[in-house]
Figure 1 (cartoon, rainbow, N blue to C red):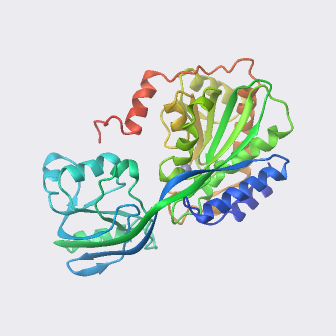
Figure 2: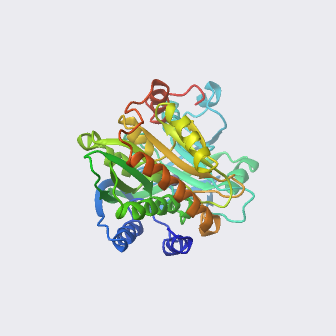
Figure 3: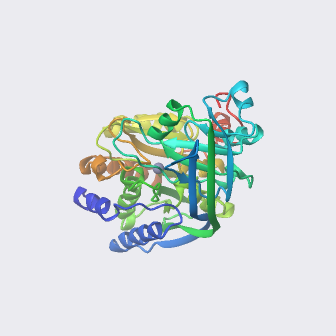
Length: 408
Ligand SMILES: [Zn+2]
């Protein structure tokens, strides 16, 4: 795929497309049309997701209203309580949460939410953004169902500058009013099959949804264009293994598209390998291959990079992306990414636009991924063992919150 066409796709998809939204479906239809343009017929496959429409979200600090966004799927209600800033999750700090509205740093993950509930918090506040940025943006967050497990307390998200102000002012009380309608909706995967000579498949994945403030050019229209480029290359070329391309919806909401796809365990039996792309082609940064596979693949990719003439760092780990549900079901899975240093490319905010992308780098990354895919697709026998080694199983248990990491 040529850089002009690549950059045109970034321009055409320069809009926010949250999982389950009409805009996400619009992007799905766009990707399907891109496949049709090279003569391939993709399917749009719906799957159910939680949705919510917020009617009221208000946050008062010592009686004064503070700009916020309410957490989706965090229920409805009104709560007024002492304010507490939980700086760390040591036992002393947690013991101070009882009966309070608690502000935390960072994301509200499964274990943090679990800690808040265990310790009697009655509401929560998170913040995002950066005190050094000019904007006052606030991301639209949700209380994910696998985090809440039905136990909901109201919460809001605020800008980092506001959070700093609250601490400087030493506020004592907080009040959250949250009203919302919660319902079920649909997100979509876009699936394209290019059958091979044998009835076994290599699945290439990339998510095409974005977070609430982001046009998601880097994260992850880049990977979506990447697998589109690979699909275009193979559409009229023979290959031994079948190739299936899945543009996943709702990755940003907890890998929901990949989880929905991997729910069909019978279909997974025919999959020998998953190649996932999440963030490629940015101007700065290094190219990596994160392999949730046996260690041998990391050596293979290193050698392949040297042979091909591509700087690539390959290692074993769990990548926070659509490769993970595959690995969790026993399918060896790897993610390719070009990782930008954070001061040259950030994600999940309004700065993730076409400005981060470089057409020449996209071409180069797609060419390498295509070459790697070609080796695997035409292998007489897929060289990657269809097992997940124990060290990766441990990491999957931690990532998928079945086990708690000592650091958390
Ligand atoms: Zn992503």
